Image 1 (tube, rainbow, N blue to C red):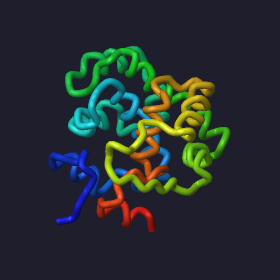
Image 2: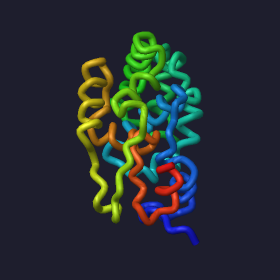
Image 3: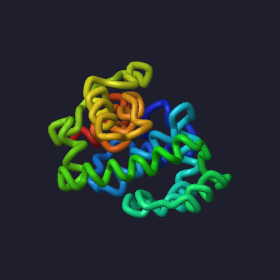
Length: 187
């Protein structure tokens, strides 16, 4: 049996841990999805978001940023009444605001990927944590990302949210050193 990070307890978390968490992502659609899902997680557990992930994809047009940037009042009302997603008005509104800000970043940098990965010089940060209790909830880099995103008009992008996104999209390898994924992703 492979040792894995202690936070991955149920099958959904184990699958996410083993296949996705910490794997570098460079696709703008996927980067947008994680940016939004991490913001939706604020004040909640990641397990809740994972359980609703398919519903989020359905409700938000598979995180197609251009479509979301153009949502009208009727679509927003549908989202507010959708029982399968997080129906927090501020988070839903932030998703649309963030889609528009995301498009501006893409226009300025050519891609969101180029923009976001620049904060780590296009190479994942390799940490060496013995226990998941040692893993920080934010970093110097997440502070820089948060401040820059906020200045660009993004919402629900605090330093902790940015750090969680960095972990999810592989900008930082926070698998514990006893985890089989730590060695695989360090290569």
